[in-house]
Image 1 (tube, helix red, strand yellow):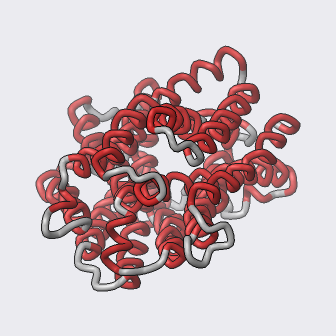
Image 2 (cartoon, rainbow, N blue to C red):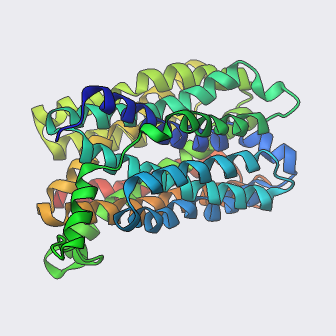
Length: 401
């Protein structure tokens, strides 16, 4: 029986917290990095190194999320919200960089699992005609999480007695919402049906964990994975360090950083829409090449210019091309594989290749760009050099996709 519109609206509200706080939590670390460094008195290299265990939480989340096939979507989502809330709150009470790292690692585990299950629940509960809009809403709120951090930064929340810690205390909001609405969330009908089949011994065979690595799919999986990897390392390195670079190497105030993020990020998010339209008009490959070239060009300008006006427009365009390429990347990640293994292929690409960028991108920038010990010695030049990593990705798209 199809779900009622009223229930689907409620479900979407509950699931929005998962994507909103994924954007929110990661943006705290990016936009308040100078404050965190000052609080713990650590080097840029150590700040970069701590991102490795923190972001590995997203890798662990891949295996946690798979348990929803066994225990159910609803219980795993609810416990993930509780876990994220606990560790986000504990982050506010970190006493040194290592306790901070552990609490953030744990919050990433639960946040990543929460995000993955939220996407699954939308796919399983919403009718096909409304599914794309629901997924688009979830992903939009991920971007709004970043914008919310910028709003709080511009409002001066960091100037309170708690400094950056106050931002993590906002993480208790999902648990408050959950307390009031958890009883109204139901298990997905598809999972319930599958559970009944298992009880009758008629369960649908699960796709093997390594199915996407079968010889006939391996080439495309490695090809798409390498494109994701060569984009994600410089991209996540840039997003993790731009606010730090702007304040420490270009003299921006935190208010200026907040305004730049709010306006440039808000306008730059139109890149998603333009990418979708371009894909329909000129095709996947030309669109991907245009977006990759634009991302590289404007990111280098952003991290090299000393002019504030040029910096603003470079940030807007770097966001537009860097984030906006996601629809065409998602198309590559699904359309190159048959229906029966698309989910597995997409999971391998995101949770192994792309997450490697989350893990190593910020770390490389911190280590190489450390002003005292880094081989390059500044953040701007380090990010600019890393952007060159996207050139082989452009070649792979041009020749093989």
